[in-house]
Image 1 (cartoon, rainbow, N blue to C red):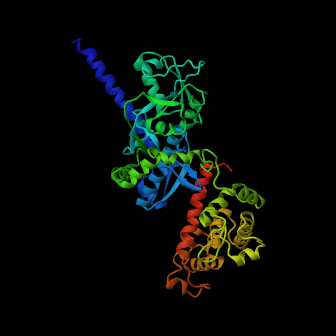
Image 2 (image 1 turned 30 degrees about the vertical axis):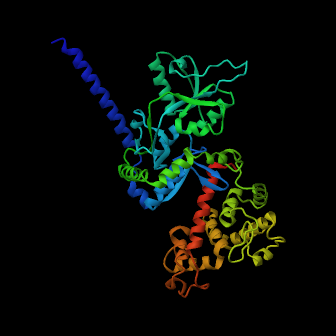
Image 3 (image 1 turned 180 degrees about the vertical axis):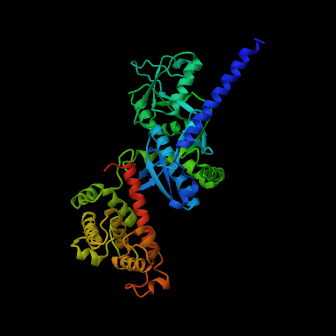
Length: 469
């Protein structure tokens, strides 16, 4: 009978561990914000956190780009929801934000690990990769004594610098156990993986670890690094949702399974992970990581915006929408320059040379100030008022005021843009709207200013996410 006691002990211990894990998981589920797909649909937007680097999310020549961004845009379009992106490179902070309901989805290159499944629920993987050691190549320099590491056993006693709370920490701890020796792991807070790769290339740290697909991209930027030493088996890379967001997970999983089969997905993956012609993007001063410039006219935009207390990134977002930063472009309607001023508007605001970038921006800002004053008394909230001002910049204040009158007549709030005034401006091309007695300015192709406001504010958010003011 006694010989069964050890076995019974093992069984009870195993059950105890399983129950403990189940309790941890249930605890996390209970503590998660009770938000699922229906709540997100009612809200009308999906809130996502991603990380800022040269592949996942960045701005190039004023245009938001990135592997994760393009996937998320495709997903939000399929769901018919607005996409709201916040940026954080802190893994633990992202988990906390997810569970608190501050975001609905973590869209980064998360390695699926057992420990993490006790906190969050992973989606269908969006790619598969493995972890590699990043080190400098050997050199002919007489002072260069460090040998290249090819065998993981040779990591014994070495110091490896990695992103804090990343899957790389977990893997290195497991590897140390596997080789039966210590690996000195230094966790660096507030550093993105690519920043650590740059430190290796510059000789400031000896080693770091990252995913193979990202490592191979960085070979295009640093010709003195080696990424051939694998330290893990292939691993699934996925997004994460709250454990109690089962409906959202099902929708995202089904979408990912089907989307990965499309040519669109293959194009996106090639664009950011395979196509070497994309290398020049990161090396350009117009890349938000490398140089932080939005356009060739940043200095002028900053100078003129500061005079009138505008955030220069907002004005840059507007200029991109108007002219793509081309100072001599002319629209079909006769609007000219960076801020697409009509000649009569330019004359009204004292613009001497309409194609001069500085003169054009000065005139455009004066026009924005004039519009802002026109709505100031009725709409005291500056963030709300901005939407009316932007729409008026595009289509004229008369049509916007018509939409405000229509909103008031139909028991909507004439001083709130979203789902109130914007609806009536959007539909002002329909006879039942523009023929209404309260309308003074007649027909308007309202779809253009409606999207104009949304596009500029979305781009402005991207600029704020990745470009310092």
